[in-house]
Structures are given as structure tokens and as C-alpha cells.
Length: 502
Image (cartoon, rainbow, N blue to C red):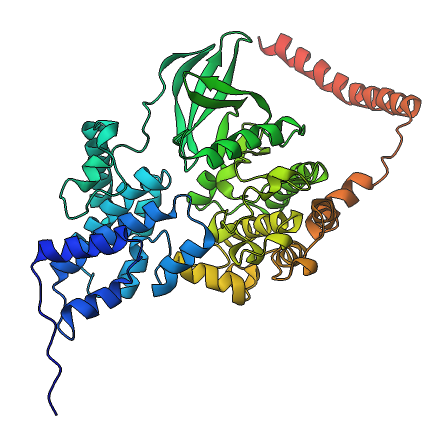
């Protein structure tokens, strides 16, 4: 029997060009099928594989921006998620076992996430790859310097630029097509950047009219091609402007200056809940209950006004200097019953995977509502109790677990967890929305009835004994007289001996 001939191996430039053309033709190539077709049964040179993965990583993140669920399914059909991380490739290709190869992928992941996705922190990478901590920070800083130095002409940027061109990522430009804000911006004085994310940058600014510090948010988008995101940005302002609660971040102003949209909010001095989680701070049960109760009370107010958050996560909860949780960033919120509620109901999967409810990841639009926020808050609850997320792994693996698997109880992960709080948490993350608490007020009530809060209420509810002021005064006089009678003889003896010996 004649063996099938192995496919003729192209040179590297031809290979990269062919792979790039597959992506540009909207084929969304499955990389394993592409390699099999190209190399047959032959082993793929690792240096060639890493070059292909760098292209694959960039295109997947680029395609994820504004893609609908059907497009996402076409991309992840080869078991790689639409926004892959280094771990996803390492799991699929075990030959990527050297630090040099991992660092190359880490650099590329960081670059494309800045360009097309979000703004990950250095700390997040050192946590994921502790064995490479010494190298990672320098590599990430080098990427930032390269992006800052490139600053190409916007006219040269194109989503159809060939990845076979070695300057592809330089020509894609910086993380935003508009310069960072500085100095005066209308009535606002920009002080410094506070952070950045998938929706845009947030600055600390000073409102010269009202003479107060504010958080000023600007979207990272193209006003001509990203009209749906512009509408989402304005919707965030409208949704939040209607709401008033001590645990919600109030919106002050929204508008446009020199073609730039902006939103101003209260400036909350403190830190995001993610910072506490990153420090592995295992909080006391009563502190966890207090935080979750505050967040639930705030979201109860939004739900009563028909506003569902849909992207609740620790990064969207700020802890102020008084230790109170402040819920912010309603960029994916919608108002139930309004015409706008259909803007993100066309098949787009919205939210952050680890904190998304099963109905969100399965795109069951009709079921997404207040109970979805209950689920997301339950995941935060679990993370604070157990010190880890209920489901872990690659993005695709987490999505599958959310849809099909039951999590371990927090007490199986960490000992000493209050049983009442654990029961509340597990009910919040039930797979079926009807099995969860049906409102945030139900969550508040359940926490109030838990053992932790029950003990506090029992102490607070004990009657305070009335003090008889007159009787207390009589006792005080009697004690004073007794002490005086005991003290005077001692004082007499002291003075007598002092006169004799001195």
C-alpha cells in the first residue's frame, strides 16, 4: 500500500502570507487544520509554529471587537476562545514549553490586548506566570515603549494589513487612535490617568466650574465606525443619571469636546475590589457579608429602576476610604422595557466570562435580567469566601464549566467558612435563574438572616438596663467615704515619720 505523500513544505514567508490571507478572507482558519493541510504528518518546526500563533492571537483579539455571537462561534470552533490567552495555546501545543517561547506569546498577548481588547496590569501577568516574574515586567515595559514610539499616521492603519509584513503590529498603531488627554479639556483640568479598560480611559480631573475633583471617562472608539459603542456609552450616562444610592457611583455630566465623548462621575478615593483579591486578603466573614450586602442593596436600587448591570465583577466595585463598596461602570447596562434594551440583544455576548451567568454565555437574551446580576454577585461572593473563583482554567474551559458543571462548595476549598453565608452564596450561583434569589432585596434579607448578621442583631437587640442615677450617686458617696476613712490613717503615719526622721 502506497503511503500518502506529505504535503510540500513552503518557506516561512509563504506560510505566514497564506495563513494571513485565510484570516483576511474571513475563513477564520482553525490552526490545527491549517498545519495538517500544510505539513501533513510532518512535525511542525517550533519556530514556525510560534510565528503562526502570533498572527492567530492578533487576529482573534481583533475579530472579537464588535463581533456577534455567530462570528464568535465560528472562531472558537477549533477549541480556542475568541480572546485567547497564552495558557490556551500552551494547553493545545505542549511543545511550547520553553521560557523564550512563552515570553514571545506573553509579549504578543499584552500587545494585542492593549490594541484591541483591554488594559491588563503587569501584576496580572506575574500572578499567571510566577516562574517568569523576573523577565515579564521588563518584556511588558518594552511592549509599552514600542507602542509609544511607533505613533504611526492613522491613514496607514488598516484592518487588512498583511501579517506577513513584519511591521504589521507597528502599523496597527497605539491602543487608541486619539491622543491621551492632558492639560485643559473644556471646563476640566486633566490631572492624571487613573486607569484604562476595554471601553476607554479614566482620568482624575478637576471641574473648574464646580471646583471639585471628578473621574472623567473617555471612550476608546472610532466615532464613525463604532456608532453602537457610542450609543452604549451614552446609555451608561443615562442609566446612571437616574440612580441615587450611597453604594452607587453618581454620574455628573456627559457630553463631547472637540469630537471626544466624555462622562464625568464622582471620584472615589480608594481601590478596586480586585486589588484586595490580588493581595490574597482573606476577609473575615462579617466583612465579606457587609461588602456583598452593600453591593446587593445598590443593585437592588438599579433593578427597581429597570437597570441591569450585566458586567458585575470586582473591577467594577470600588472600596472607598470608609470601607464601603461603590458599584460603578454600567457600560453594558440596559434599561428593561426600553427600545435601547435591544441594542445588545442581537447576538452579542456581553460581560466578563468568569462572572457571567449561564444564560449570558449561552446567549439566552430573554432570560438575562436581575437574576443574572445576582449570579455575578454570587461569583464575587464565592471568590471572597473561598479565595478563588468557582470555575478556573482557560476562557473556553470556564465557559463550559459555567454552563454544565456544579462548583465545589466554598467550604471544600477553604475551612472555617460560615455555613449560613455559604448557603446564600450557592443559591446565588444556581444554574437555573428560577433557583436563585429573585431579587437583590432577597439577597439582602438572606444575609441579614445568616448566622454572622444574626449574632450581631442579637447583641444589638438585647435591652439595655436602666441606670438609677440617684442610687448610683448614693453608692459613689459611700465608696468615697470608705476610701477616705482607709486613707487618712496612712496619711497621718506618713507625716509623723517624715517629721521624726527628717
